Image (cartoon, rainbow, N blue to C red):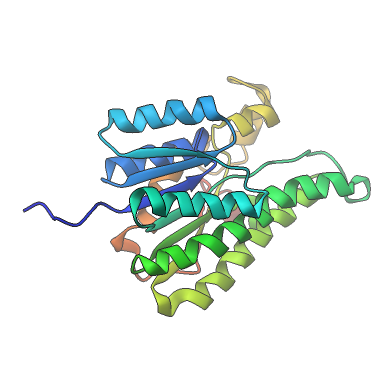
Length: 255
């Protein structure tokens, strides 16, 4: 028998490409209504079209996650349009510039990375969690990285930002567990995305081949593999899981 209850709503930041887009499609296949947020309107419209082709209700809201006012407006628009919020996947982030030693870092570089990767997650949760509580509880998943567990030379600011995401998430998990909100982290290893192309070259580059040799699984992961983890963390099957950093990294951090 089909339920008369409206389907749940998932909100995804950084939803116009890569892991965010794959997660939006995965949630749609699970009968979620989906809101995607990002700065690129053309790409956002394209993802909405893909979601609607799957039969899902979908909405794009142009959002810069470094601005709290835009995050507040995003959540308000979601609730106004769909009437509720059940799942938030805070996936937006930047890699910054790798190859700089600690002594070569600049204030501008620090602000660029931390504003997106840490400030964006903090203030997204600030506005998402009350909305999720009003809907009766639900799930928040934040994107960190394998570099949120292990460091790499030349990546101090990025590494620090991803360690910070794990800490923010664990604190929020403790604060809201008894109000029915689970807060977890998904931490990808090397995944085939635009970000990986920028870092190591497009296509079957030597850089990517070198990275793959450092992964015990022997390959670079796919965005669909991360999306599957995000959907599971947000599902009833993970109802007793909160405050967890789920590493989806082909064994990279197990060494």
